[in-house]
Image 1 (cartoon, helix red, strand yellow):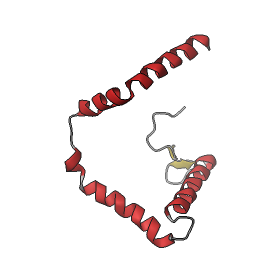
Image 2 (cartoon, rainbow, N blue to C red; image 1 turned 90 degrees about the vertical axis):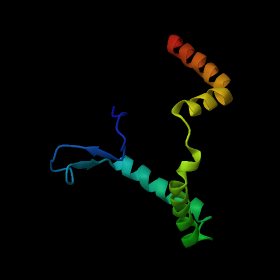
Image 3 (cartoon, rainbow, N blue to C red; image 1 turned 45 degrees about the vertical axis):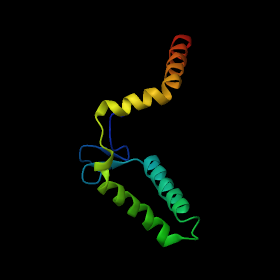
Image 4 (cartoon, rainbow, N blue to C red; image 1 turned 90 degrees about the horizontal axis):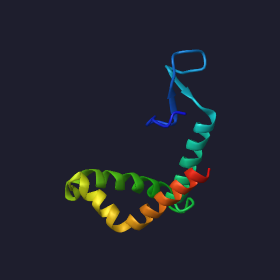
Length: 105
């Protein structure tokens, strides 16, 4: 299990015959990534009715918010406080359910 990897698409492997420059690509991961790209292009282009502009606008939006991060800076604990205030009951119930599944299973 490689749950601690940040890049799930590429597994770092020692150089061998089945790797390219030390990276081993999994067929199922590449397929999942290709499906992700196709679905994203379909949705952002409104099923090709707004094809070039819709996809480019999605990237422009990311660039816009990358430059405006100073407006939303808070201490690290502020987001935890907001999460507990808004979703605290769900987190407690989820914890009870998880503990119950752990005991029962």
